[in-house]
Image 1 (cartoon, helix red, strand yellow):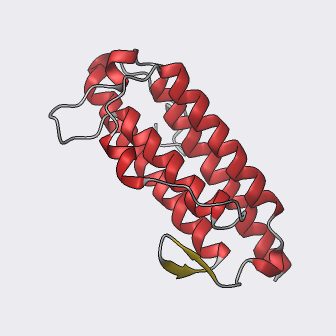
Image 2 (tube, one colour; image 1 turned 45 degrees about the horizontal axis):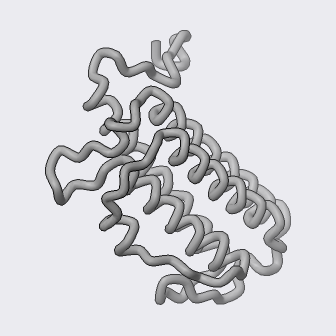
Length: 168
C-alpha cells in the first residue's frame, strides 16, 4: 500500500505543479485588462477562473483533506467582477497551490481511503485529491485556450518539441 500511496501522492503533487506552471506561464504573458476580459457578460474571465481554482483547491484539498474549516463561497468566485492585477492572481494561485501541496505531502498513507465529506459528496482523501487535481488540470487547458485566443500569434508556448520523440 505504501508504494502505491507514495506514488499517488508524488504524482498528484507533480501534476498539480505542472498545471500551475502552465497557468502562471500564460498569466505572465497577459496584461491586467486581459485577465479581466470576458467575450460576453456571462463568460468567466481568467480572473474568475483563478478564483474558482483557488476555491476548489481550498475546499477539496486544504479543507477536505487537511481539515481546515470550509469557508468557500463558490457562487462568489463566478459573480466577482472586481478588477484584478495579474501579479495578484499569480500570488493568490501560488499561495493556494503551495498550501495544497503541503497538505498532500503530509497526508498519512493510511488515511487516503478513509471516508470524508467534501462539498456534499462522500469521498476519501485520495478521491478529493484526484478530483481537485484533475479539475485543476482541466481548467489549465481553458486558461491556455483563452490566453492563445487573446494573444494569437504573440502567444509563447511553454513547451516546444525539439526531437522526434517529443513530436517535432
